[in-house]
Length: 263
Ligand SMILES: [Zn+2]
Image (cartoon, rainbow, N blue to C red; front, side, top):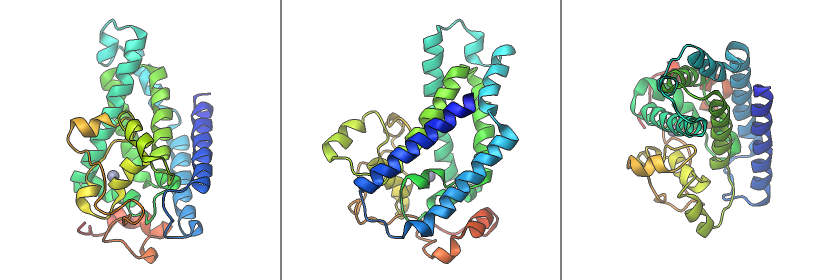
């Protein structure tokens, strides 16, 4: 049941954002969709089937295991349910922000994370372009965090839905009026905010790490308001990976095991 709710929310939001991209795109895409979508959707499919087979619902289950064994901070204290729910959401979101920062700073994790940044365009399908090993590392880290905090199981499901939904939203190539974007950005990471993170300019890539709520970047001073070049013409991807022939499905899977390139 938990998987059905998660998957329906995921595909529902993905379809809405793709529809929005067609109706009101923010930028003209550099490549034709057929040149990128099979790779992004292929990685998404590979990763979701891997998680289903190897670790179906494991994040959710780990919250139950922690509760049954009184592991984790929230299971050791008497906390109202609504507060445990809220603390779980905030703690997990900050933990994911921290993991993302570390993925840029630590070369071992960057080997996996760089695949996400090699996309030469930026749209809703970029949100699922991850190396399977990064998905496995992320899941292990999430289970560690869930156990540490003694996460509320319902909040874990809510968190997964919110995180996936926000990631699809903030990677979308959709136009949002600047006045609305500015207001929305006080709470959420918007596409204009996250696109800066996909710039080829390293100082821009190393900013705006948040996925859901925008406060972590402001609090940790990694927030950047605008890219150096206007959004419509800024370059997306990594400066060291510009050739499409290097970014095929097979080559991307092998990328973590090849020599690291300077960014
Ligand atoms: Zn990143």
